Length: 358
Image (cartoon, rainbow, N blue to C red; front, side):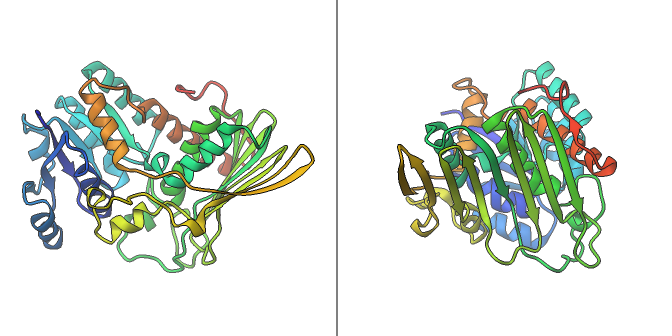
């Protein structure tokens, strides 16, 4: 089999945790070059990915005619210029989420990929989470009846600032609205399509903080509202999802296990139970159907980040359509921009005519 040769730009947390070990699970992909400047990063690469050549410049990847796919896993400000350079060099491209800092940048990349005839995708990996897959199945089954409210929470607890962390600075694309809010917006678009309007309350709460560290977003749909919230001060575990339907509720605590395993250094291809949740965090249905109260524990679907990269490989090889399309990721960025506009103007912002994929 002819391998798809991959160049990875960036070997910080994103490259080390979310990309390199996941790509290893896909037989069609071969990681051949990685940019790394820090000695500790180079040591990890030599130990875990001895086949990959270590380079210090992204240009060494762009100009390598043997590389087919470039993965951009850098700070958010470099997503656009590196993705553009890779497409101009005739490469397929995967970009870490968020796609870009602006919808204008995203539009340019979407058009460039189409002109070059190359696959362009964004790593919206939460679509491949056990908790989201379970939520999607519960909604699609229809037992909840007409759905009127959905609540999503994407929380962390860190009451201090990480020193020298770009995410903590007041820079374009920094803060948890771009980081975690992008996930909630993407999932809502997948489940319910285009909203009619958006309202956002964005805050900087922790002492000394400069970037958004709390968001409260409301997406307006006909006869339904989706609430997406995130905080850096959630020490007590919060529910991930709650759905309010005419027939009852679905509640889901706990999160997909893959990130924890990856951060601990595990590889998906070495774990036959990869992506399986512990039974103690399964979701719960509480329904009233035909005058009967029904409470059910809902076993979680299996999460699989490798499914993302398998689909990218299949799309490059012409075997299947791309799941995470760049137009969809562009619309996430547009809604983030509208969220900032809502925060600045303190009003609900109409969405009509501003999304291209839903």
